[in-house]
Length: 262
Image (cartoon, rainbow, N blue to C red; front, side, top):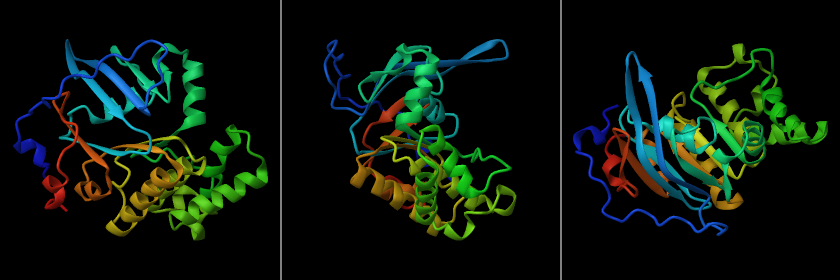
């Protein structure tokens, strides 16, 4: 897919940078990231992947992050979700300054509040689809009956009720992706982080998944941050953030820019 962002020169929003939040103040944002920087070593050189990003997302928003390959999308997602510590900057999620906590507390925060959808599925080979979903709920101390009911409901939501007893080697790539999505959504997380959630899905199932994410946002108040190349998802978003060369080029891009790239 040709990304329209490659045809545009990065133009930073003219709006001034947000003012720092007073100590002890309660934010209206579900995610408040400021000054995020991240570099990686490539051979003998350091490559700046994120170059000082501010990101503000309100509760219940569905925000897409779009941009060319290598622009820093996935690194930004990892930094604001507590998976990868940035070199500089702060991330406040649900009024919690996550990078000031210990690794164990960050893990607990993610378990209690976050759902993750990864492009690589991250399924356990020996577990059925139902067990894949239940294992997260077990960590959350749900009893066996409630886990089974929640797993069945989540798998039915992604049209996989008939596959709930199948292991990954008996599932297609698209079915594995939908199991991973059911697992992320079953615990009704307050924050949902998705990295290319429709990459293995056809148009029909992609629509099912995005409709489900919208339902989580609008009915449960979940906040969704989704990294994608898939221009079809633009119509599901409340807002599209574009990123290129480690910098945000727009905090509210026009969905029409992506409409003809279906």
